[in-house]
Image 1 (cartoon, rainbow, N blue to C red):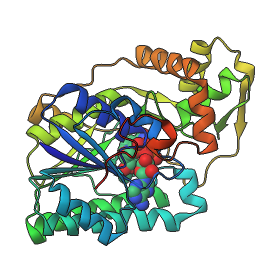
Image 2: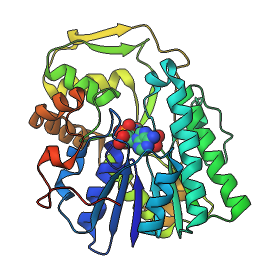
Image 3: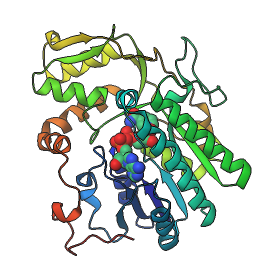
Image 4: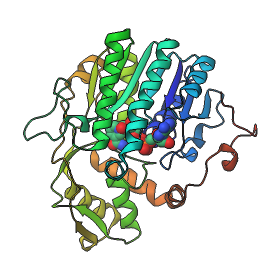
Length: 342
Ligand SMILES: NC(=O)c1ccc[n+]([C@@H]2O[C@H](COP(=O)([O-])OP(=O)(O)OC[C@H]3O[C@@H](n4cnc5c(N)ncnc54)[C@H](O)[C@@H]3O)[C@@H](O)[C@H]2O)c1
């Protein structure tokens, strides 16, 4: 199976690529990634020398480069992770979110129409449903009601993907996952930010009253779900992927402090983010019944493992902040000198 993976140098994408290549020698992957501040080739170093892996630095908004990649690689399936993904940044700089998340998705859809693929899986988020009042959980039929430029741009992309299924019969799948955590997550998102600050004895900034509720999904469970949907999902369908672990932000922060053996006095309440959704909750029955997938990592063990990873890899956090390692040559990983790209 030839898989074209966008955003494969980011957090979830790189976990997916490493997992998929380790699991099967039949999978051949081409990663397209612009290597923004969030993309880091070091995340792909463990698979960089596999003959089944290729990388090309491409902006998904660049139609000519995307078409070239499709023409030369002829993917059988696409898994589309590439996005601007941080809500706070979207409030300050929405333009990049609209262009990458909406226009970039449109460019990929056009390429997939020109060089037909068996599956086009678009990775989306539970944030497109907006805040869900307790005790309800959003199923896939719930109307989209995004609250910030990030979730609005993801909702726009979701609608574009669905439109290509209706207009062009493109075999699309959409997955909407809840909050991910795990190794290799850029330390601006809640859990890695809290872990890296706690380990450095810095204050842990908590928005508002900290009572916002999120569902937490370990990234390895998310990647397994994407593989399951790719293999067994019904074309044209959307699948929610929740971790069945609902928790208030302040409780997450307390557990991080416990794992890091640091005092609660490090918690610092800061003014709430504008448009901050109060609660996300997903109904994931459909992905379970259609694919048999279930989340398997408990929050406690997943958090311990994540804290351990950040503790054991302090230089990784330092390097992603400094923006080092933009080429495999910098990494000295490929024995072939220049890493093969299309
Ligand atoms: N992190 C979460 O909790 C979460 C939850 C649900 C869904 N998602 C979705 O999963 C996907 C991946 O999220 P993540 O947390 O790994 O994000 P990330 O920010 O860690 O990685 C995004 C990747 O996309 C690349 N990229 C950005 N703009 C690009 C462009 N114009 N062209 C090519 N590449 C570009 C970046 O270089 C980076 O490697 C996103 O679509 C996000 O909306 C994330």
